[in-house]
Image: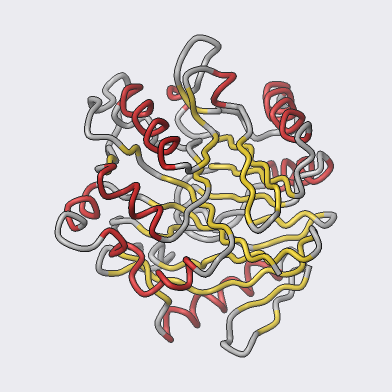
Length: 328
């Protein structure tokens, strides 16, 4: 079985960037390093730019600016075998077009695939392709965050859409990107979506409808992120929908009710080119790194994921380590 790992937000700036000056490049992965390395493929939402240059975005109000030093950040991503990153989000342009260009250049030089932002609209909406363990995977990436970051035919930016199946632009842009991806006849097609506001624990009706449309368009996995908290899992006509994968590693303040410091490593098992199972390993952020969740935190996350997913008719089982398992 081929094992593919999906995570939510990986933000390497601010306090994490400072801490990484005095610890190993793999320090951000805490006690998860070996688990991540053992995966056949690892796919993340990169919630920052990788650059030593650029200038903070001031065209519109930005309360936060996230930037990581590529001298350690790229080796850190490589240390656990990150194969692809999503760039369609609301922080990749925090330090302007030059820093985004740096980010893309550093990722390209490191052989890390990416999608969701680029030099113009054509580049931003272009699919990315990765081959892991003989499996050909195509990724398309879009976001509904920060419209001022949107790429234009002649302007650098992100792949911005309104995630509403009644919105012509969304169907046209996403549909075109999916068609380009299908031309390569991939074994798996992934749609990575940075959608919705912070701290929302359930997807809105429009997002569920959009996920259903993606299923009709042949998407195998919907990789959602943006809320900073995980949401439930649904299977729609054999399409695995991870509505939100939460936060994986960052320096964000922790909400005592929603616990944005807790989430999962979402492991998708693939057998004979077909999705076979989803394994959820509870994670927890502390000491500016991601760790396997300790007992109380892990139990909280498992119970919450069970409740959120059961609303969609999704019923998990438990494996020998008491992690959640869903047969697909």
